[in-house]
Image 1 (tube, one colour):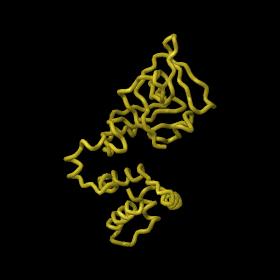
Image 2 (cartoon, rainbow, N blue to C red; image 1 turned 135 degrees about the vertical axis):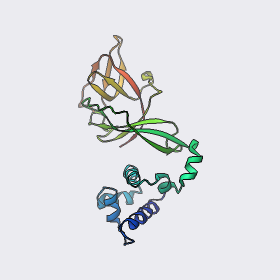
Image 3 (spheres, helix red, strand yellow; image 1 turned 45 degrees about the vertical axis):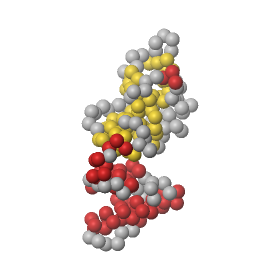
Image 4 (tube, rainbow, N blue to C red; image 1 turned 90 degrees about the vertical axis):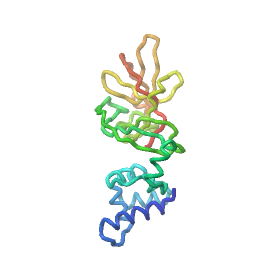
Length: 205
C-alpha cells in the first residue's frame, strides 16, 4: 500500500463530488475528519489512517479494498476465501476502567485481507485508561471468541455483573476471577459470576 497513491485516489473521489475542482491535502484531511497537521504527520511517517479511510469509504459506499489494494468488487466476491470476516460492533463499548457496557446485536461486516488478520473475529471499541500503555483509550480491539483459555495468559474481554471489562485474568482457587490492569494506578479487582467472552488478539490504538 502506497500512501501517496491512496491520497491521490481520495482526491479523485473528492474532486468528483465538488465538481472537478483542484483538491488539496487540506480537503483530504477534512474528508477524513482529521486535521491537516495530523495528515502531514501521517504522510511523513508513511502511516495510513485505516479507520478514517474505512469511514470515508463506508459513507460513500466505496470498496475499501479497491481504495487500498485496487481490488474490484467482482474480484472480492469471487475470492472471499482470501479475506477474514470481522464483525464490528460499533455500538458496543467495553471498558478498560469503569465497566460501562452497551450491548447491541447490530454489527457491520468488514472484510480484511488474511495477510493482515488470518481468522474471523469480532471487533469492539474500548474506553478508559486502565490498560494503558497496552490498550489506549478509544482503541479498537479484535476478539477471538473461540479462545477462552486464560491459563495461557493474555488479555481477555470478560462480562461481569458490573459490566464488561478488558483485562488480564487470574482465576483464583475459590472460583472467583481477578481482573488485572496494565496501568499500575488501578488495583486488581476480584469479581464473581464472570463470563469470559474471548481473547484479545489484535489492538488498533
